[in-house]
Length: 100
Image 1 (cartoon, rainbow, N blue to C red):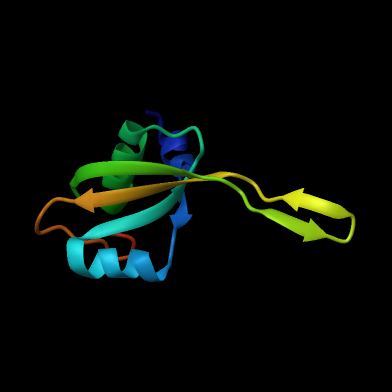
Image 2 (tube, one colour; image 1 turned 180 degrees about the vertical axis):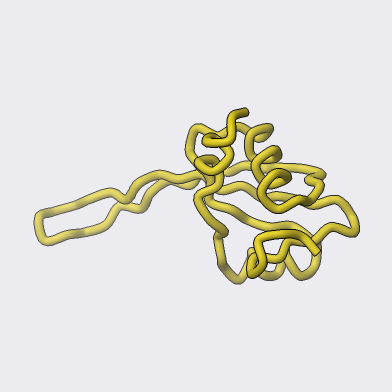
């Protein structure tokens, strides 16, 4: 996987109540990822960017909601979410960009 693809796979962290609970209790983190990203690409991208060891990657396709607009109905874009489980003893620190 080339260096440019590493930066395009991870779109950003997904912050929610469930994601915070998983990060605190089970050392799992949630990311928004590119819709065409594979589990292997996601694993390599997290390991490269944050310097941690990934144990498991689970992905989920999220369907966009249908919303009412002034001109009728519209649809938000579909997106992909990845649950990253780190190996025991590993931790992600979003503030510094590297593992401690």
